[in-house]
Image (cartoon, rainbow over all chains, first blue to last red; front, side, top):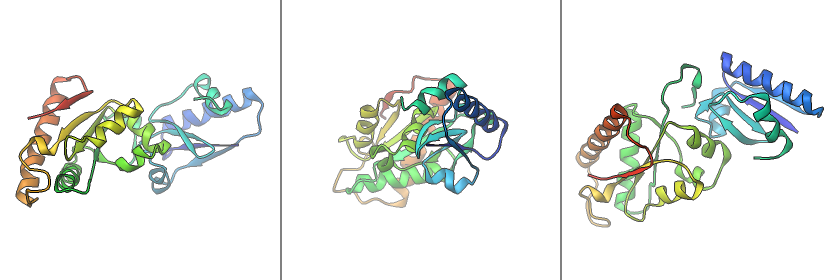
Length: 79
Length: 136
């Protein structure tokens, strides 16, 4: 599984990344975390606002700093 | 253009039906003019219709989605309805052009763009409800 944090490196992007890592750690899963900072790559995924979070290539959230509890269902495969 | 949400600027996303008829061409050109005038960011309606996740989630989290539909078939609005997304719709055929007949000139594009831009601005100013169909 791969979780992508899409953002150019602003504080909100960093907070989302930190929350995602806590969520992954809590679930005890082997998950690759990738930061996508290239604006062209971000736009190629159709993302118009950052930060955004994608799981296995599917964008789950755009323009929001999700909490750990909001991220966990996405990693578990829920909506 | 993707924007950082740190500054909490209002996000306005513009989509056009860009359909085969002259009114689709007008919708496309009006949307592009609105983008050029920085009314909002333009994105691909086809990508939203195809349910590509980044496009759909961007529309879901935008403050306003402006749909420029060419004719009353309203494909853009129907895509947003199907996905449960809020939107404001402008139908080009509601203005003056007749589907399949009217020549789409630069003057017409400029004129209708100005009307749409003013209407978008007025709703922004008074904070009107967003999930409405706009008409002249």
